[in-house]
Length: 241
Ligand SMILES: C[S@@+](CC[C@H](N)C(=O)[O-])C[C@H]1O[C@@H](n2cnc3c(N)ncnc32)[C@H](O)[C@@H]1O
Image (cartoon, rainbow, N blue to C red; front, side, top):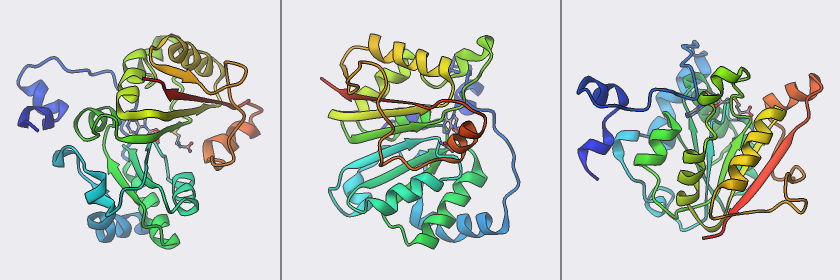
């Protein structure tokens, strides 16, 4: 892995390089609770992964050859920890930019005795580019990504044709990209991007959405969506080639 690939956006920009600046998130400087700070301080060496360490080798990381599920934007990590707890024979990697969320996820994983989960505190776009080998993932999960409601902000949505192709390359053939959203317009855009992307098969019997799989626990954002009377749309596409 060359040095160049591990530079941060800020370093590259300082050298005058053109780098994607439209990001899917706005960094919020939320304060850490005592529990989150304690978890980050004490368990980062066990559960944390660092962008600057470059490409991962999941066998070395987890000490086994189990399939790997990657979750992008896990929020506070409640559903990710629950999934990892329920599936000890799958290795989970979570990526989240919001530090309190990462702390909360680590704290909960420790409380529940979860050993098959590691996390990044970083932009998923850079982690995908620099740390995740091609054809290495069995599942990629993207649950309730920020919907960026206004049309002028749609370019900030993480699901874009280029992103969809990056995910395809990281999946093993047959591996599944699973998305869920409670924002109808985003669901329609996701569906269109996925249907027009080469190399995917829609797992929906009706060629659009799938019923919510039992394996996906209710997330905080989904519960909120239900309260607000929103629908929820799940999409599952498998890498075909
Ligand atoms: C609407 S929240 C949903 C959280 C969680 N999946 C849930 O359903 O409760 C979207 C999350 O994605 C994170 N996020 C957005 N863009 C990201 C990126 N490029 N890399 C990592 N995390 C990102 C945000 O920080 C936020 O926590």
